[in-house]
Length: 310
Ligand SMILES: Nc1ncnc2c1ncn2[C@@H]1O[C@H](COP(=O)(O)OP(=O)(O)OP(=O)(O)O)[C@@H](O)[C@H]1O
Image (cartoon, rainbow, N blue to C red; front, top):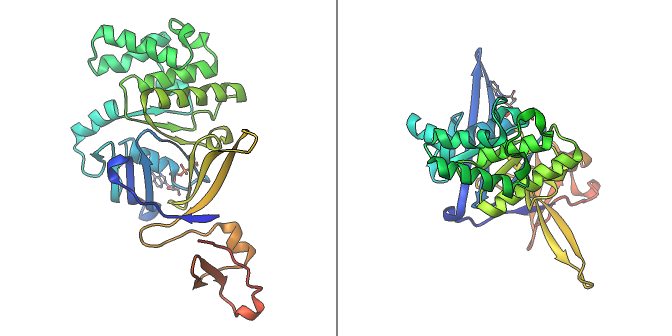
Protein backbone atom coordinates (compact mmCIF):
# COMPACT_ATOMS: atom_id res chain seq x y z
CA UNK A 1 0.00 0.00 0.00
CA UNK A 2 1.21 3.50 -0.78
CA UNK A 3 0.03 6.93 0.33
CA UNK A 4 -1.68 9.36 -1.92
CA UNK A 5 -2.17 13.10 -1.68
CA UNK A 6 -3.85 14.90 -4.55
CA UNK A 7 -3.74 18.40 -5.82
CA UNK A 8 -7.36 19.28 -6.35
CA UNK A 9 -9.05 21.99 -8.29
CA UNK A 10 -12.57 22.37 -6.93
CA UNK A 11 -13.69 23.52 -10.40
CA UNK A 12 -13.61 19.98 -11.80
CA UNK A 13 -15.17 18.40 -8.74
CA UNK A 14 -18.81 17.33 -8.84
CA UNK A 15 -18.77 16.07 -5.25
CA UNK A 16 -16.70 17.62 -2.51
CA UNK A 17 -16.92 16.44 1.09
CA UNK A 18 -14.38 18.01 3.39
CA UNK A 19 -14.08 17.03 7.03
CA UNK A 20 -17.70 15.87 7.05
CA UNK A 21 -19.14 15.05 10.45
CA UNK A 22 -22.53 13.46 11.25
CA UNK A 23 -23.46 12.85 14.85
CA UNK A 24 -26.70 11.05 15.72
CA UNK A 25 -28.17 11.61 19.16
CA UNK A 26 -30.70 9.19 20.54
CA UNK A 27 -31.75 8.84 24.17
CA UNK A 28 -28.77 10.85 25.36
CA UNK A 29 -26.24 8.69 23.48
CA UNK A 30 -24.17 10.18 20.67
CA UNK A 31 -23.07 8.11 17.70
CA UNK A 32 -20.45 9.69 15.46
CA UNK A 33 -21.32 8.08 12.13
CA UNK A 34 -19.00 10.27 10.04
CA UNK A 35 -15.92 11.63 11.73
CA UNK A 36 -14.18 13.98 9.37
CA UNK A 37 -14.79 12.21 6.08
CA UNK A 38 -13.16 13.61 2.93
CA UNK A 39 -14.40 12.62 -0.52
CA UNK A 40 -13.63 14.23 -3.85
CA UNK A 41 -15.28 13.01 -7.03
CA UNK A 42 -14.50 14.45 -10.43
CA UNK A 43 -17.20 15.39 -12.89
CA UNK A 44 -18.09 12.35 -14.99
CA UNK A 45 -16.29 9.88 -12.72
CA UNK A 46 -17.71 6.43 -11.86
CA UNK A 47 -16.65 5.66 -8.30
CA UNK A 48 -17.29 2.69 -5.99
CA UNK A 49 -17.52 3.06 -2.21
CA UNK A 50 -16.90 0.01 -0.03
CA UNK A 51 -16.78 -0.53 3.72
CA UNK A 52 -17.87 -2.85 6.52
CA UNK A 53 -21.37 -2.68 7.95
CA UNK A 54 -21.68 0.40 10.18
CA UNK A 55 -18.74 2.23 8.57
CA UNK A 56 -20.97 5.14 7.48
CA UNK A 57 -21.81 4.41 3.82
CA UNK A 58 -25.59 4.92 4.13
CA UNK A 59 -25.07 8.04 6.21
CA UNK A 60 -22.87 9.43 3.44
CA UNK A 61 -25.38 8.53 0.69
CA UNK A 62 -28.25 10.08 2.68
CA UNK A 63 -26.28 13.32 2.94
CA UNK A 64 -25.31 13.35 -0.74
CA UNK A 65 -28.92 12.68 -1.72
CA UNK A 66 -30.11 15.70 0.29
CA UNK A 67 -32.18 13.54 2.69
CA UNK A 68 -29.99 14.17 5.73
CA UNK A 69 -28.00 17.21 6.87
CA UNK A 70 -24.44 16.85 8.19
CA UNK A 71 -23.53 18.14 11.66
CA UNK A 72 -20.39 19.92 10.42
CA UNK A 73 -17.92 20.14 7.57
CA UNK A 74 -18.39 20.88 3.88
CA UNK A 75 -20.61 18.92 1.47
CA UNK A 76 -21.07 20.32 -2.01
CA UNK A 77 -22.62 18.48 -4.96
CA UNK A 78 -22.88 20.05 -8.42
CA UNK A 79 -22.39 23.47 -6.85
CA UNK A 80 -25.13 22.98 -4.20
CA UNK A 81 -24.16 23.50 -0.57
CA UNK A 82 -25.86 20.66 1.30
CA UNK A 83 -25.46 22.26 4.73
CA UNK A 84 -27.08 25.61 4.03
CA UNK A 85 -29.56 24.78 1.24
CA UNK A 86 -33.15 26.00 1.75
CA UNK A 87 -36.06 23.54 1.87
CA UNK A 88 -37.27 24.60 -1.56
CA UNK A 89 -33.79 24.23 -3.10
CA UNK A 90 -33.54 20.81 -1.48
CA UNK A 91 -36.71 19.65 -3.27
CA UNK A 92 -35.36 20.93 -6.58
CA UNK A 93 -31.96 19.33 -5.86
CA UNK A 94 -33.59 15.95 -5.23
CA UNK A 95 -35.74 16.20 -8.32
CA UNK A 96 -33.18 17.51 -10.81
CA UNK A 97 -29.59 17.27 -9.61
CA UNK A 98 -29.38 13.76 -8.19
CA UNK A 99 -30.90 10.43 -9.19
CA UNK A 100 -31.12 7.37 -6.94
CA UNK A 101 -30.91 3.67 -7.58
CA UNK A 102 -31.70 1.32 -4.71
CA UNK A 103 -31.03 -2.35 -4.05
CA UNK A 104 -34.66 -3.16 -4.77
CA UNK A 105 -35.78 -2.04 -8.21
CA UNK A 106 -39.35 -1.81 -6.96
CA UNK A 107 -38.37 1.17 -4.76
CA UNK A 108 -38.16 3.23 -7.97
CA UNK A 109 -41.12 1.68 -9.81
CA UNK A 110 -44.91 1.72 -9.60
CA UNK A 111 -46.29 -1.79 -10.18
CA UNK A 112 -49.40 -0.73 -12.12
CA UNK A 113 -47.46 1.27 -14.75
CA UNK A 114 -45.55 -0.05 -17.76
CA UNK A 115 -41.78 0.50 -18.04
CA UNK A 116 -42.13 3.53 -20.29
CA UNK A 117 -44.86 5.05 -18.10
CA UNK A 118 -42.64 4.63 -15.04
CA UNK A 119 -39.77 6.39 -16.80
CA UNK A 120 -41.99 9.28 -17.87
CA UNK A 121 -43.41 9.84 -14.38
CA UNK A 122 -40.52 11.84 -12.88
CA UNK A 123 -40.46 13.95 -16.05
CA UNK A 124 -44.19 14.65 -15.67
CA UNK A 125 -43.55 15.76 -12.06
CA UNK A 126 -40.81 18.06 -13.38
CA UNK A 127 -43.29 19.42 -15.99
CA UNK A 128 -41.29 18.26 -18.99
CA UNK A 129 -43.35 18.55 -22.21
CA UNK A 130 -45.10 15.31 -23.20
CA UNK A 131 -43.25 14.81 -26.46
CA UNK A 132 -39.85 15.25 -24.81
CA UNK A 133 -40.84 12.77 -22.08
CA UNK A 134 -41.65 10.08 -24.59
CA UNK A 135 -38.48 10.63 -26.66
CA UNK A 136 -36.26 10.72 -23.61
CA UNK A 137 -37.82 7.51 -22.21
CA UNK A 138 -37.19 5.70 -25.51
CA UNK A 139 -33.61 6.98 -25.63
CA UNK A 140 -32.99 5.72 -22.08
CA UNK A 141 -34.41 2.29 -22.84
CA UNK A 142 -32.17 2.13 -25.90
CA UNK A 143 -28.95 3.23 -24.13
CA UNK A 144 -29.60 0.86 -21.21
CA UNK A 145 -30.14 -2.06 -23.62
CA UNK A 146 -33.84 -2.82 -22.94
CA UNK A 147 -35.92 -1.23 -25.75
CA UNK A 148 -38.05 -4.41 -25.87
CA UNK A 149 -39.55 -3.90 -22.40
CA UNK A 150 -41.09 -0.45 -23.06
CA UNK A 151 -44.70 -1.61 -22.77
CA UNK A 152 -44.20 -4.40 -20.26
CA UNK A 153 -45.44 -4.39 -16.70
CA UNK A 154 -43.17 -5.19 -13.75
CA UNK A 155 -44.26 -8.82 -13.61
CA UNK A 156 -43.24 -9.35 -17.24
CA UNK A 157 -39.60 -8.40 -16.69
CA UNK A 158 -36.57 -10.19 -15.18
CA UNK A 159 -34.89 -8.75 -12.07
CA UNK A 160 -32.08 -7.30 -14.20
CA UNK A 161 -34.56 -5.68 -16.60
CA UNK A 162 -36.52 -4.20 -13.69
CA UNK A 163 -33.35 -2.74 -12.23
CA UNK A 164 -32.43 -1.20 -15.60
CA UNK A 165 -35.89 0.37 -15.82
CA UNK A 166 -35.31 1.69 -12.27
CA UNK A 167 -32.03 3.12 -13.56
CA UNK A 168 -33.87 4.80 -16.42
CA UNK A 169 -36.31 6.32 -13.87
CA UNK A 170 -33.33 7.62 -11.87
CA UNK A 171 -31.84 9.18 -15.01
CA UNK A 172 -35.10 10.55 -16.43
CA UNK A 173 -34.60 14.15 -15.33
CA UNK A 174 -30.97 14.17 -16.52
CA UNK A 175 -29.38 14.34 -13.06
CA UNK A 176 -25.75 15.39 -12.88
CA UNK A 177 -25.10 12.77 -10.21
CA UNK A 178 -26.38 9.21 -9.80
CA UNK A 179 -26.24 7.68 -6.31
CA UNK A 180 -26.64 3.90 -6.23
CA UNK A 181 -26.96 1.83 -3.06
CA UNK A 182 -26.06 -1.84 -3.65
CA UNK A 183 -27.73 -1.83 -7.09
CA UNK A 184 -26.68 -5.41 -7.85
CA UNK A 185 -27.19 -6.73 -4.30
CA UNK A 186 -30.23 -8.87 -5.10
CA UNK A 187 -29.27 -10.05 -8.58
CA UNK A 188 -27.59 -13.17 -9.98
CA UNK A 189 -24.24 -12.84 -11.74
CA UNK A 190 -25.57 -12.35 -15.26
CA UNK A 191 -28.19 -9.78 -14.24
CA UNK A 192 -25.55 -7.95 -12.17
CA UNK A 193 -23.32 -7.74 -15.23
CA UNK A 194 -26.19 -6.35 -17.29
CA UNK A 195 -27.09 -3.73 -14.68
CA UNK A 196 -23.49 -2.68 -14.07
CA UNK A 197 -22.94 -2.53 -17.86
CA UNK A 198 -25.98 -0.25 -18.12
CA UNK A 199 -24.61 2.02 -15.36
CA UNK A 200 -21.30 2.22 -17.23
CA UNK A 201 -23.07 3.05 -20.49
CA UNK A 202 -25.15 5.79 -18.84
CA UNK A 203 -21.99 7.22 -17.30
CA UNK A 204 -20.30 7.30 -20.71
CA UNK A 205 -23.31 8.43 -22.78
CA UNK A 206 -24.63 11.18 -20.50
CA UNK A 207 -21.47 12.12 -18.57
CA UNK A 208 -23.37 11.46 -15.31
CA UNK A 209 -21.12 11.31 -12.25
CA UNK A 210 -21.83 8.00 -10.47
CA UNK A 211 -21.23 6.91 -6.87
CA UNK A 212 -22.01 3.24 -6.20
CA UNK A 213 -22.00 1.81 -2.68
CA UNK A 214 -21.37 -1.89 -3.13
CA UNK A 215 -20.17 -5.18 -1.71
CA UNK A 216 -20.13 -6.68 -5.20
CA UNK A 217 -16.58 -7.31 -6.52
CA UNK A 218 -18.01 -7.26 -10.06
CA UNK A 219 -18.62 -3.55 -9.48
CA UNK A 220 -15.84 -2.52 -7.10
CA UNK A 221 -13.13 -4.30 -9.12
CA UNK A 222 -14.26 -2.88 -12.45
CA UNK A 223 -14.21 0.83 -11.78
CA UNK A 224 -11.13 3.02 -12.00
CA UNK A 225 -11.35 4.11 -8.36
CA UNK A 226 -12.72 2.40 -5.27
CA UNK A 227 -12.82 4.32 -2.02
CA UNK A 228 -12.85 2.42 1.29
CA UNK A 229 -14.62 3.87 4.32
CA UNK A 230 -13.66 2.80 7.83
CA UNK A 231 -15.10 4.20 11.07
CA UNK A 232 -16.72 7.15 9.32
CA UNK A 233 -13.64 8.22 7.36
CA UNK A 234 -12.27 7.53 3.91
CA UNK A 235 -9.33 5.30 4.71
CA UNK A 236 -8.12 3.78 1.45
CA UNK A 237 -8.34 4.03 -2.31
CA UNK A 238 -7.71 1.48 -5.01
CA UNK A 239 -6.82 2.94 -8.39
CA UNK A 240 -6.95 0.77 -11.50
CA UNK A 241 -5.38 1.39 -14.86
CA UNK A 242 -4.96 -0.66 -18.00
CA UNK A 243 -1.41 -1.50 -18.98
CA UNK A 244 -0.30 -2.81 -22.37
CA UNK A 245 2.48 -5.41 -22.36
CA UNK A 246 5.17 -5.82 -25.04
CA UNK A 247 2.92 -8.25 -26.99
CA UNK A 248 0.06 -5.73 -27.08
CA UNK A 249 -1.94 -7.62 -24.40
CA UNK A 250 -3.96 -5.61 -21.91
CA UNK A 251 -3.94 -6.14 -18.16
CA UNK A 252 -5.47 -4.18 -15.30
CA UNK A 253 -3.08 -2.94 -12.64
CA UNK A 254 -4.65 -2.16 -9.26
CA UNK A 255 -2.73 -0.12 -6.71
CA UNK A 256 -3.94 0.43 -3.17
CA UNK A 257 -3.35 3.75 -1.45
CA UNK A 258 -3.96 4.99 2.08
CA UNK A 259 -5.71 8.35 2.21
CA UNK A 260 -3.78 11.21 3.81
CA UNK A 261 -6.17 13.95 4.91
CA UNK A 262 -5.47 17.66 5.16
CA UNK A 263 -4.62 17.39 8.84
CA UNK A 264 -1.97 14.77 7.97
CA UNK A 265 -4.02 11.86 9.37
CA UNK A 266 -3.55 8.44 7.88
CA UNK A 267 -5.30 5.15 8.71
CA UNK A 268 -2.94 2.22 8.67
CA UNK A 269 -4.66 -1.00 7.57
CA UNK A 270 -5.64 -3.13 10.56
CA UNK A 271 -3.83 -6.19 9.21
CA UNK A 272 -0.57 -4.20 9.05
CA UNK A 273 -0.85 -2.86 12.60
CA UNK A 274 -1.86 -6.19 14.13
CA UNK A 275 0.91 -8.07 12.29
CA UNK A 276 3.50 -5.77 13.88
CA UNK A 277 1.60 -5.40 17.20
CA UNK A 278 1.33 -1.64 16.73
CA UNK A 279 -0.90 -0.03 19.34
CA UNK A 280 -1.49 3.43 20.77
CA UNK A 281 1.63 5.00 19.29
CA UNK A 282 4.27 4.35 16.65
CA UNK A 283 7.68 5.82 15.91
CA UNK A 284 8.14 7.74 12.65
CA UNK A 285 11.35 8.25 10.71
CA UNK A 286 11.59 10.71 7.85
CA UNK A 287 13.84 9.37 5.13
CA UNK A 288 14.76 11.17 1.91
CA UNK A 289 11.93 9.56 -0.12
CA UNK A 290 9.60 7.89 2.39
CA UNK A 291 8.44 7.76 5.99
CA UNK A 292 9.18 4.72 8.11
CA UNK A 293 6.58 3.66 10.68
CA UNK A 294 7.91 1.53 13.53
CA UNK A 295 6.36 -0.26 16.50
CA UNK A 296 6.89 1.55 19.79
CA UNK A 297 9.76 -0.54 21.11
CA UNK A 298 13.56 -0.35 20.93
CA UNK A 299 14.86 -0.73 17.41
CA UNK A 300 17.40 -3.42 18.29
CA UNK A 301 14.72 -6.02 19.08
CA UNK A 302 12.05 -4.77 16.67
CA UNK A 303 13.22 -6.65 13.62
CA UNK A 304 13.00 -3.27 11.82
CA UNK A 305 10.22 -4.19 9.47
CA UNK A 306 8.93 -1.31 7.45
CA UNK A 307 5.20 -0.95 6.80
CA UNK A 308 4.76 2.25 4.87
CA UNK A 309 6.56 3.69 1.92
CA UNK A 310 6.29 7.08 0.34
N1 LIG B 1 -30.53 7.43 12.63
C1 LIG B 1 -29.52 6.96 13.35
N2 LIG B 1 -29.51 7.09 14.71
C2 LIG B 1 -28.48 6.63 15.44
N3 LIG B 1 -27.38 6.02 14.92
C3 LIG B 1 -27.34 5.85 13.59
C4 LIG B 1 -28.40 6.31 12.72
N4 LIG B 1 -28.06 6.01 11.43
C5 LIG B 1 -26.86 5.40 11.49
N5 LIG B 1 -26.41 5.30 12.76
C6 LIG B 1 -25.14 4.72 13.22
O1 LIG B 1 -24.11 5.32 12.45
C7 LIG B 1 -23.10 4.37 12.11
C8 LIG B 1 -22.97 4.30 10.58
O2 LIG B 1 -24.17 3.71 10.04
P1 LIG B 1 -24.44 3.53 8.48
O3 LIG B 1 -25.83 2.99 8.35
O4 LIG B 1 -24.12 4.79 7.77
O5 LIG B 1 -23.38 2.40 8.08
P2 LIG B 1 -23.28 1.52 6.74
O6 LIG B 1 -21.83 1.50 6.39
O7 LIG B 1 -24.22 2.04 5.73
O8 LIG B 1 -23.75 0.09 7.22
P3 LIG B 1 -24.53 -1.05 6.35
O9 LIG B 1 -23.56 -1.55 5.32
O10 LIG B 1 -24.86 -2.08 7.40
O11 LIG B 1 -25.76 -0.40 5.77
C9 LIG B 1 -23.52 3.06 12.74
O12 LIG B 1 -22.86 2.95 13.99
C10 LIG B 1 -25.03 3.22 12.94
O13 LIG B 1 -25.48 2.47 14.02
